[in-house]
Image 1 (cartoon, rainbow, N blue to C red):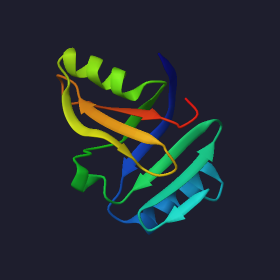
Image 2 (cartoon, rainbow, N blue to C red):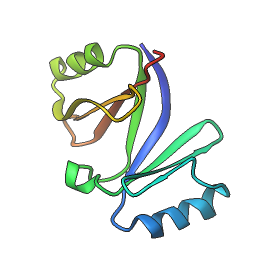
Image 3 (cartoon, rainbow, N blue to C red):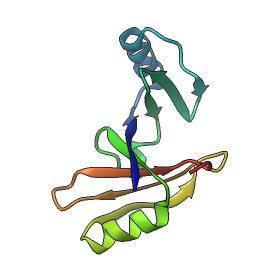
Length: 116
């Protein structure tokens, strides 16, 4: 089961320029501002900027489906023919992420919060 798409992560090469762009777009300051990740919240949407994204195989923005059982959803996607891009990993405070490529090369992210 999913809780929908409420997170999108953009791979960025210049974190400062990307941060300035999204501050202008969203008219808000980031809630997280670290050298490894900048995050904004606006209208129920979480927008993240990842300066390591390209090195991790991200070719563009990745929508993250919020799920209650990330390992089960990841297994189901792999069984359906998806290609593993990033296995389940903890990105801090118990938040788990994983990602796959579909048959057309589109990236699909999964995210499980510790409260899920």
